[in-house]
Length: 410
Image (tube, rainbow, N blue to C red; front, side):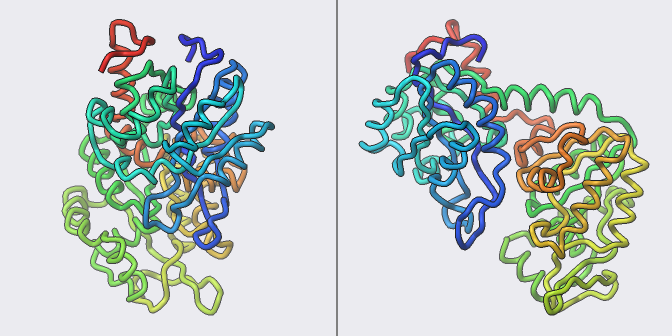
């Protein structure tokens, strides 16, 4: 961004506004990503006199968290301290007219980019440049700014397509994440723990295999849905509610791979020793040896928490991605809160990642006590594994053009 004059220029800005929503009301519960984008890249573009057109997503079609971006625009308005326009259109006549009438320093949020069916298709920048999304919006813009590092692992239209037809630069969040994560990885010392929670068990398997095979991590600790699935791989029957959930999420297919990994690296993958369930509205804990249970598992138990805390205290570096329980509910926040507090008070270098994890860190006011906190989840996984992120690669390809900040011919 230091290399481009944004004064009176129309900027297509891709951000990640994906937030924690109430699935019933669609109201925003926590929005660390909106705040971070607003306080850095968007604020800077406004101050430099740009006409800012925001592209973002919320959930996926069919998911409970799939929603329009009207409330996101209202939240951003509070962050910026100025009105933010919103149009419930992506590249139709209303959206195009709103873009054309933008003035210097104004901000416009377009509708959820995933309303466009072609957005979620994987493709090269050149392939996506031919899509209706890019063909409609690019002619109205002077420059594309990609600030969505947490979505950079997706080769989606709004992530890579504009880089083939517009001058393209990295936003401040994108720049900060790449620099900080690169430094963070180089700072990881042994003993090193990877603590993987949340619901993305496919990512957990991939990253566990990578960090154990390459001796990046000494141990992988598990919790949340990931921990439940790893318990199944250890031979435990969780009980009908939790087993049905894993099947509904199509996660049972990962069990053979997890079993093979545990056999290959005995003792280096740690699963919960006890769990917490809800019984008549209250938290109840018991050993995994007493499984199955007729109650849904919502958190790790106290014995597991103490074991993980001790391992954190003995570690020199900790990577934590994904909460270990349903921390949004007070009776099941114990595992996530205690572990984050242990990381914050330890002497270990800590790298904390994932949207839900960041929400938890903010909830407990621990951000300033962590080594580095990234909003990235899937992108963090692939970055940690040394894989090239399509969104970053597209920016690098754009920068390699003979005149990178001029409009290319496609």
